[in-house]
Image (cartoon, rainbow, N blue to C red; front, side, top):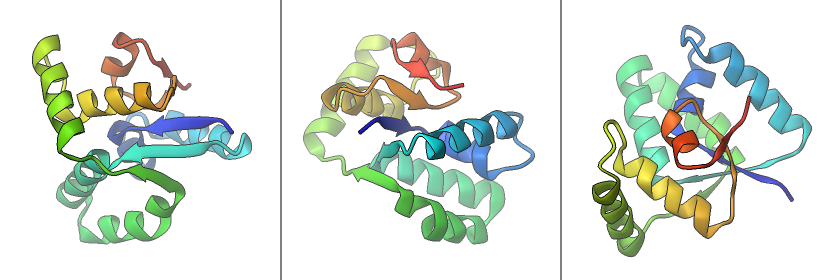
Length: 133
């Protein structure tokens, strides 16, 4: 089965019609559905999505995401060890704009042997992963 990591940037673009990446996100999501790809993310990404959706689009968007989109995702729940390893990676990289959520995502992708990511965040490309188009 082909699995693809899903980042916050893709979810926000997909759910917000006024986002500049909305149409590309919609096209990628349709391709993923066509190829019946399994969508994987982390609990850190979910926290970030819920926080940004709530702030930018309101609680109705949070509720809709939780009900309609979140069930499509396989979630890797992040524990203390991965959290600390992600923090170590973040501090080691010292890249402007890189977040703990991104660093943890990189670790999970490597642990799960994932190469493809549904994202609009250059840090994934810079880290050697393939951004879907």
